[in-house]
Length: 352
View 1 (tube, one colour):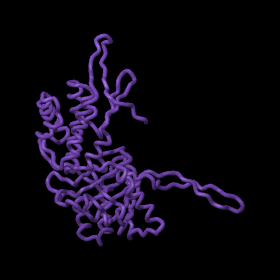
View 2 (view 1 turned 180 degrees about the vertical axis):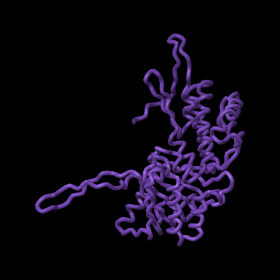
View 3 (view 1 turned 60 degrees about the vertical axis):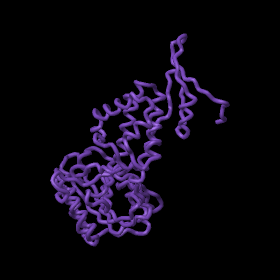
View 4 (view 1 turned 45 degrees about the vertical axis):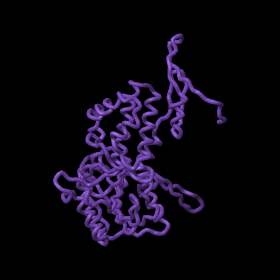
């Protein structure tokens, strides 16, 4: 988890990056950018808002030979080691981005490189480097008094409510390639930013593994539990799965299966499904790991607890008290109507 509420911009560099295939060049500012007291909160919100709204999927710098050959890793490591060189090194970041801007579809734009202090990640207070690129110009109107009339002026600029591209590189877990967050609103060339410019892989920490394992369980519930049992058992399997993650600090697969699968015949089905599909979720060899609470909370929010019937009736199961569904909801078959039914036991109706 990150917290940028108290994060400060210590230095900010601004450069313009053209499209190399169109020979648009690079404009490098000689000095850092000074922000007024009025502008500082607006710029901070422009930079940080997308990362507060986006699910935290972390990346790390990578290279097939060695991290030291990753150009961005080397440049940003130099900044972290000597923050006073941030503006000088920001020119190298701009030049590196320009070298990757050689596809005709890539738009020119302004590049901000910010040195940040007091960022919070995984309860650790660290410095960070923010790299942000604006690409889309927006039309806006200015008004001007001219003699006895108001006139309109059509101008262009960037929209402070939408950051086109950006990343936050935290000075944290350097040996693994740092922890990095990235946003890209204009995905006309998805490889340009993450692969060519940053050259990153997914950061496979406990948050990543927890998310992937829960997603694997969700697909197993849909592909195996539902056909073998019914919709109720599919929903309850996922509820028991999330509850297991919520009440344990560490995951252990054998304990998990014994606790969440009511039908023991499904245990070998689960293991076979993992052999077939595990690589897709990067969990093929995973049987134990520390559980990330934030990932469990996110999964619970997305969990569907409703049984949708073809008779335009919905049955909503209570995940706060899941034992109610186990004890008071039964499924059966009516021979006369040739239809399935759910039998629900209760003492009295509750007022909504």
